[in-house]
Amino acid sequence: MTSDKIRIALVDDHPFLLEGVVHVLSRESDMEIVGTGGSADEAVQIAQEQLPDVMLLDMNMPGGGLAALDRIASSCPTVRVIALTMREDHEVVRKALTLGARAYVLKGVHTKDFLGIIRTVFAGGSFISTALATKLLEDFSQTRPETESALPPLTQREEQILQGIQRGLSNKEIARELDLKEKTIKHYVTNILQKLQVRNRVEAALLARDMGRETL
Image 1 (cartoon, rainbow, N blue to C red):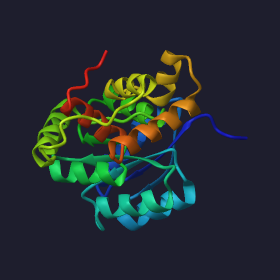
Image 2 (cartoon, rainbow, N blue to C red; image 1 turned 180 degrees about the horizontal axis):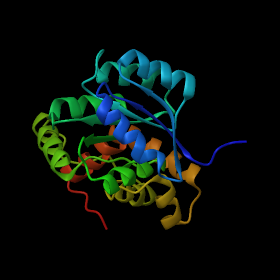
Image 3 (cartoon, rainbow, N blue to C red; image 1 turned 90 degrees about the vertical axis):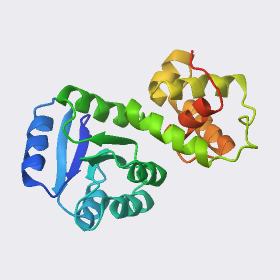
């Protein structure tokens, strides 16, 4: 029988934090822990053997969180990774998002917010803090060629979906708003990312802001 719970794996080399997070998540009726570890190799092994819905991945663990993320993205693309860190390292954030992380979260975030982020990522959404998004936007703007002053043309429907992405909505939420099927939204999102030449939803939202696209 297939479980309707969010299957979560947590990999962090700090036992106290690991135990604390496991305790918090185990109390949620819609979540279950399917694996824990403390190194990059263990993270990859857990991802491959358990295929969790969501993996909480420490960026500073032995073996390197980015290295683990890269291997997981290649071998287990269905695993949604939330990167965890103690500090806002903008370069690490950029690399993590480029490698496919769905969210970047500072350790110590409020429990209610943390649980909300996990559920958002599981539903197909993404998350980074406003401060981090602003900094990434500034960096992205500085490195982008000046000649690129406008986004490639999008259809009216693609514009609507891009606006939903900017607002942080999941595919399911966008589908509900537009009265479309979720798989249809996934198809549109793939087309949008290809048109904008970006690798993920966060980069798409940042590029749209940079080029003057407004949310509704």
